Image (cartoon, rainbow, N blue to C red; front, side, top):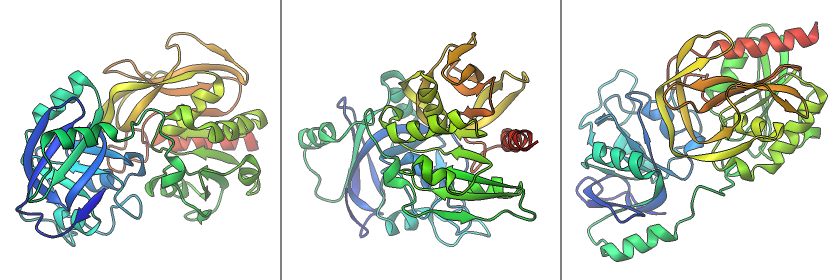
Length: 380
């Protein structure tokens, strides 16, 4: 990715998909060129959390909501230390942000961090195209001297694909750190960071959990060195088929029957550890309004998602695994994609979405309580 932060407001920009479709608009954020996988997010709010979610590493995010940037950027809502999206696509960016917490405009923040974007295109048409054709590689080119269409398309097609990408170590912490419990400490959890969001350990800390966040390359010995009452596997980017290291750690945790909770990428890791396959979705689930049913209670919750891969597990039967019986605990009501797994003979479960609700609804907050209950049961 090459970028400049000068002249972005007036420069022409072009978005080129790998199947040859082209959209023309104006530069938004930094000018230059960038490449990634084109995906769309259906959230109407929470763009700052989306931008700073490490799960979006190497993805060019198309916002389906037409107006973006209305509340500017503040210093409280980022989910990590930087913007992770490879590029940003909006229809009508706010001319002037209006919010009492805003410190600067979204355009200014994108330019500051060198994120190349495009505005003024028909994002509805682009979203429909991705729904019909599937997520694909894309390039955004902006500036006053753009390459010809053939050259831009050739560059897009040379970019790496998401399938087969091993990315979690690129976004995870390099050094372990501790998020202390809020109030009385009740439990210690080892959290394997595969692309963790800042609100996730905070949600556990609110429940009296001291969270030791470990690098994606952590071994089972690293996990158990903190003497955990439970182990957590986070969200993250990339293809779960490449995550052999985390899968091996997960198998060790399952063999010891330590209470275990995984979300998003962690759900896919659990699926692999149990012997299920994973596959790439046509265009994935991204946004804060996805309906999921908890099959253990029958309740339907509106949930926050960001995943392009899913677990291939049978929906309506209990499966035998090396660690006991397993079943699908949650399912997406839009397309019947597996959204959660649980073991019936030991304390382990996972969901495919983001219960920390940053951004998003709080319907799934009970999952952190369920994790606490597993640790309480194990201790008893």
